Image (tube, rainbow, N blue to C red):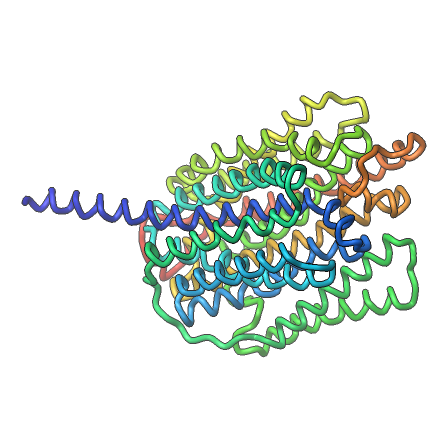
Length: 493
């Protein structure tokens, strides 16, 4: 066999191996995305069936996001220590077990606790999936790989909306969790067969004090926000907020002396990582609440059911799924700055367009704006994610992947709180929460529609203005080098 033929066969074999690896990662992302959108739709049924109060139901959503946030970088470290593939598979095991327990939970408090367990598994999967791609896929094709993961998220979100509607309506909300059992078992088996640890093992120390400070600080701040939406600003509320802010402030002091901090700020000294990670944070802060605000508008001002409201978002997910691979290939050729920045601009435009809606706007217009947002998301996430993993030092892939997810999740937590707070200021809390969580099947009373729309528009204009920050960061992130496997230095203009 000639040298050229042998080289071609080796390249074909490598491409097939890469395709199998990406298929497994794709499955994990689909599973996580399905669970996210399914849970949002199931909240009203869960609240009624378990006789749980609204404050408990809120934490069914928040407990999962908070767990992902607190564990993001630390489970990435664990992957560096014990092997990213091992921890990725362990994540599936824990996620599947947590899903099963959620499906049989007898009460709201236990459901929240099992959502934390689910979050631990989800953190292991999400923090190590990016690192596995970085270990297994050459830099020159990594953007395309992250583009496919973007497709996985959009496919999963669509499946979550459609499958969730069917299961909740015709079977039981418990099956939105129990359906993860056969899927999770399949993912565990396939992952064990296909994935191999290729990254170098690195010893790390786990920053337990940092994790506790982050968890306690964020939890207290969210509890204070919940008090404010009740209209009860008491001394206890002030203490929660003050102590929460103080703990977060002390966290950053602690991080300067911690051996390996929960927020490894040393990586942020690399210009491209700083810009990309904070662009992700501010994008989540600006945009995550828009999903909930839009569903609130469709239910409160338009009288749609939660399922019908969510279905109007499907065009955005579909367009985003098609855009992701294109954005990945584009970023492979020219770097992340152009596709990521364009994606952020389109998302900002979509939020501004949402802010122009009124109670009589065409629902087709909502679907069209959703498509613009989907294009923006499909451009931003693959390019931005690949920028982080292509420019992180190889021994820190797990930490960098976890750091990206941690900052993104922190933005989501803040955005969730802002959405609820902004709307509850303009209308009574019982209506805001009922619509926000889908526990109301009817539209707002007519006399509350106008104040609701005022608060809704204010929140969306605020979100639009916030996009200035990630767009600026994306523009100044610098030019990348994507044609080499290792990075000893990081190019910047």
